[in-house]
Image (cartoon, rainbow, N blue to C red; front, side, top):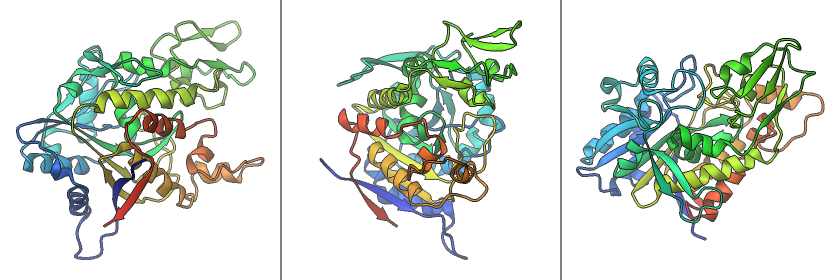
Length: 375
């Protein structure tokens, strides 16, 4: 099995040294982004614009470095993402664009247009065959992403309440799925509600986009209806641990489906991948809040191989010490704690991040074997 190259640089900037944006540019150049023929080509730069209220998403400054490099190489870049499956400020293109602008992503700050890839209501998608797919035979991908000649992923590497962590493969697979595509990836598992723990606060119901939760006024309790698609947003909304997946393989299957969606996005065209490990919140940037980072900031990574990139980032995170005052540290001090020797497993013990990388490697997206080249 081949070994891929992953390039890394830290955030250290001594007085009168290179500022972080210049270090970032040099990293991308060293990793070989200039070897891609972008002259006159449309270049999709896929990233997450952050939910309103969340402050852990990547600053627009990082996107600007990528945009300017693409322009230097003759490309026509645009920043892009697809609409969400759940309620929030990114569920349709109008609100999604306004959210991106309020979080600092405008044509003036980023240096290029911002395009919501699956259109106004999340229905503008393309059905893409998945070569070798075991779970997904045809992926539903945002049309603007599939129309691009070159694909670049720019990911904030952080924890995730269902996937374990969110890195390159999640940014590509889940992030590029239209609303139908996101349902396709999430639909394997359905949650159950423990009536003894449910307080009837209805916070979970506010997060459900599909009428999947029904409130019983007589019992003042919530139940799951047949409309549930298993997206899991209700789990993140519950402050009382009353909601769990019935199918305990759901998170494993989610990872494998994301891997196959990633293959659909990447097959047949040049692609390049970047991950930045900073402000490593325990949960996704889709939340309208962000908890304290679970580990210290580490640095910036780039590779042509998204699988190797995710593995290298996971290894770097697992070599770091838990941040003081974080939920990770609290978990590790709790009575009965079982140490998984993994910062993401210790943060969310029910998750399984390895399944995504295993499946991606199996179907030829990339390799988990890598050589780390430090600048």
